[in-house]
Length: 404
Ligand SMILES: [Zn+2]
Image 1: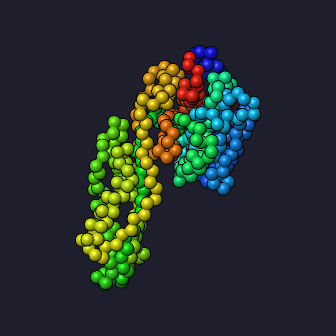
Image 2: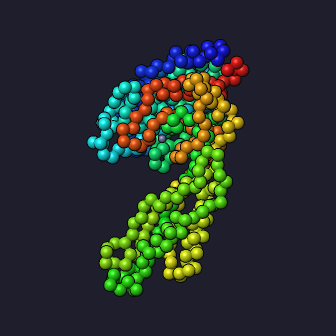
Image 3: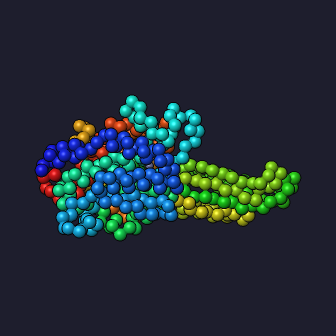
């Protein structure tokens, strides 16, 4: 079988209606983070009906990651668990909906109109969950090219909050056989090789309460916080400019302080989100923040502030020379009929955790769309192309057959 024969067989096995039905069923399950179980069961049924090995792996109580595997391992009774493996990574949780009455269609009905599916999770990430699931099913029909290797599908929980699904995933025994991974997120069909990391932290200043008519008897924690945030908003970092990513960014996201208008505030809390390119680390950022707290303490001995890290996630970067990147570029060119765009994205993905912590090379790839937005939607035609691209990327990367 040459590449054209294999791609023909794969394309024949990809059924657009199945992608649409699965996407709509998943949207209707409403898998808001924490409530992923019904969507996990829908996927498990899909793989079960297709005769594909599937299991639910509880990352958190009642919150399973879905894992499915197709392998071409020949020995009888051997499941392919120890074979060199390729992974389609997706997440099955979605963010909640605010103001559902403002949507053109109910956000959890998965309405199909004019070639687009509407609903929460359509482009982030349920459409691609369906595409990757159907891609795995297509691979199950050309198993012979997966001789001595395996392809996994994973739909993790908790991606939109604390990434506990993927942290559980990278510790499962079979994960050590994974040698490359496509992380599916809405990239607009761009082959994404880099994104920033995030450094989220909370600051608390501590003052002394007093009656507002004698402010000199108290210490005002809000004024202290203003001084500290004034320094933080102007921080500059030493970093190397990146070919795809902009400079570090700083967002002061929340602030809360004081009890009453007529009381000198004894406390103030603020939360800050700093996004860092690959040449910076969370440690660099934290050191700068602590330096500034110490400087304020030297200026004013009554100044008191605590620093608490909330979420520290590294940036993600992979070289264009990696076989995986080339496999995705080749498969995309073949399916799209033109070279795909390559570059970076502005948001964080679990590629950083899989690439940096589990040391498995990743690329990020997925449909066009506005994640988390009002009237979130995805193109069915794009999902079908993504299904083909994912299947061919896995074959190009993992198959040992020279002709492929
Ligand atoms: Zn996502």
